[in-house]
Structure formats: C-alpha cells, structure tokens
Amino acid sequence: MTTIAIDFKNKVVATDSQCTHYYNDNNLTFIRGKSTKIRKLGFKKYLTGCGISDELNRQAEFYKQYGYLDIPRDSDVIILIIQDVNNKFTVDKYITVEYYKNYFYKILKIPSLKWECTTYMDKHTDFLSVGSGCQYAEGAFRAGKSAKDSVESASKCDCYTDNDIKVVQL
Image 1 (cartoon, one colour):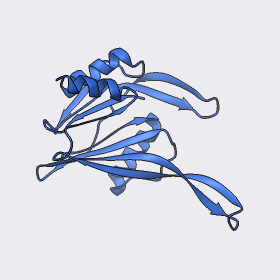
Image 2: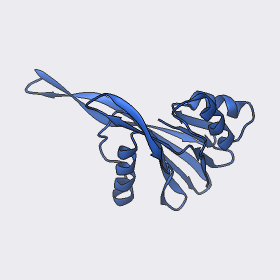
Image 3: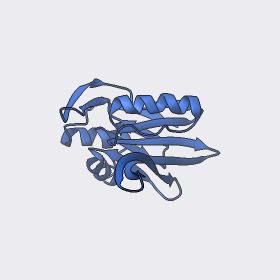
Image 4: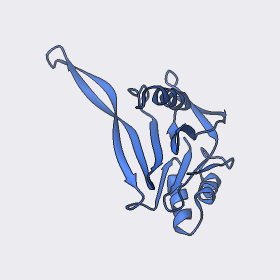
C-alpha cells in the first residue's frame, strides 16, 4: 500500500514513493521500487491513490482521456481526485466495492466491482489520510505535524510506507 496525507487548510498533498505490486494467482505482495503517486490531471487537479500501482496508472490515463474513472479491475484500490476550483478545495475518495450481478434468472450470482465515492470539502474537513499508514499519519497530524512530516512519521511505523516523500502544494 502507501500513505497519503492531505492538509485541507494549507492545500498540501503528501505521499510516499514506495510501490506495492500484487500477484492474484499466488496471493503474494511484494515491494517493487518507487513511483510518483501524485499525477497531474489538469489545472489544480490531481489524482493520487493507494493499492495496485498498475491499476492506479491505468485509471490516471483513462481519467486524463475521458474525464472520469473506468470500471475498476482490482478490488484493492483507493483513488483520490483532488482539486482546487474557485478557492474550494475538495477531495473525491473512490473505493472499490463488490456487488453481485444476477445472471440466468437469479440462479447464478457473479461478483463485479464498482466505485463508491465520498466527497470531502475544506469547510468540513481539516485532514484526510488513506493507505496502510493512515492511522500513524493522522496521529502525527493531530500532534501538530505537517502533511509531509505525518507521512514521514508513518514510514517509521508502517513497512509499506517509505520516507521518500513527494509533496504537492495546490
């Protein structure tokens, strides 16, 4: 996974750079290096997320081309669309949820994935963190640390978060 920290008051997004890859066939997770997890989509609009890096990259490219997210192919993904429009800082948090389609007159139920979205706005939220180290980042932020320092604190406690931190100021 990863750790992402968003400071709504200062309009700052901080992420670590560690990449996790997942093999569905063997049920193995391994760390495969570093990646930039904050992708620019347009003027003051960014996509970031945690989970399977291949799926995040695919979704970012799809969003750039069509302006919305594609149907998810992996259930272990959280995507954040962050934007600052007309001085309104918002984050749309997309998580994958499983639902069942009924086929053959409801005899056979086949699982499928879809997005569930929650919107966070600066007037209601001061901090948001997601990923495997989110509790550590939240605690550090509540203790007075910046978004960047919160991710760094999480990297000391969470093996899936590293201390190579990228920061975007919107």
